[in-house]
Image 1 (cartoon, helix red, strand yellow):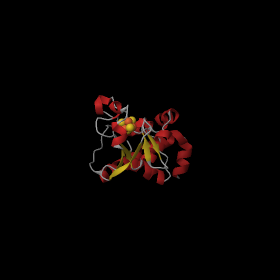
Image 2 (tube, protein in one colour; image 1 turned 90 degrees about the vertical axis):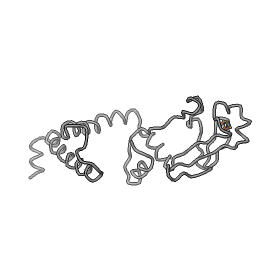
Image 3 (cartoon, helix red, strand yellow; image 1 turned 45 degrees about the horizontal axis):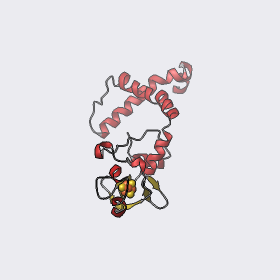
Image 4 (tube, protein in one colour; image 1 turned 30 degrees about the horizontal axis):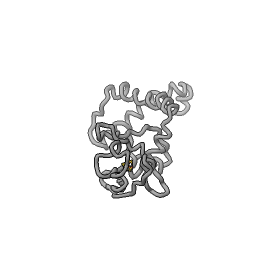
Length: 177
Ligand code: SF4
């Protein structure tokens, strides 16, 4: 699963990732309160607009979690007819990931057609790596360097096994010559 920062970094490299975004749902009020999906982001004004058409403005940046908090005016919320369905606090807050736009673009690319194509072309090599090359679903080595080395060697072995099936024996020998 990719986070927003990784999605943006890949976009900057020209890599277009097709992965559905995992979103947490609003569990507050036993999940009865408006989810953030009910709030519309206005990129030009950098504000959210709530279901009652009130504006939530940028309140603070949480650098640790890489989110920006937007808050409604308490005066709007206290007089709002929808308050009981929106917040248990004096005013509603909504968070936006610093790389939210990259996450949204990634979600748009994760269409059912793209997911079908991904299942056929990408998941097969990973399943083969896991069960035919590693022979179990775990890395033997610990740490990023160790795991990186292990996956690089496994990928090389997989490509050597797969290439003759794709190219045919004669082409394979020609390429190796
Ligand atoms: S409670 Fe506040 S944020 Fe929620 S719908 Fe009403 S005005 Fe909008």
